[in-house]
Image 1 (cartoon, rainbow, N blue to C red):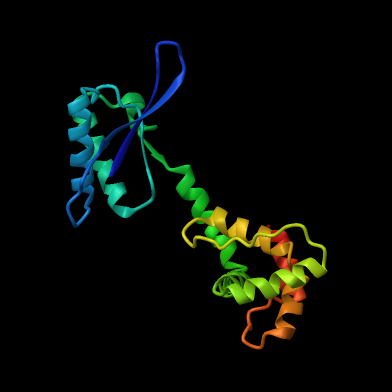
Image 2 (cartoon, helix red, strand yellow):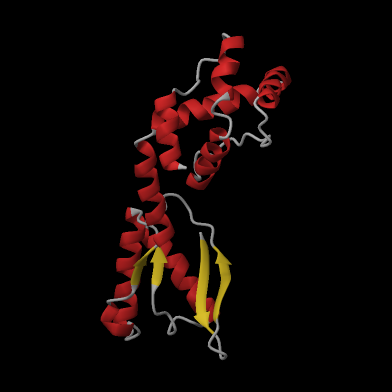
Length: 194
């Protein structure tokens, strides 16, 4: 677990520092997480300066927050009655929303992913594909493969592949093993996503 502190310095500038890396034993329970955070806060002598804690939406984190809140409340260190103590990680929430949206075009994403993966699997495939790219006078030359755990890389993959949407069907005519060519309707949906 990485513990990051955000604070306002004497010049009223927002600062951000990683203050600890904590090895958590399995199972990673709320109690283990809370103990790791409390130990870190004590080591830094900042347990009385905590205003909020931001974590993702894992159930263990919910129980961790309950333990931390009880601890801070019993020691009289809970600011604003604890109403602002637990702040959900907006990056995690955004990722959940985007992943839900991407599920609506999952089949298209898989086809584009399989296409890029297939073309990148062989220099001969890339060379032949490059010949068709030249025939269409497309100046963009790079296909990007997504990292499935990062939604922004899915966007990058779709954005780069759309530039070659005319080339893929042409390539499919010359390679019977290539079976992942998106249809015109699927490309239309891809435009909306990218």
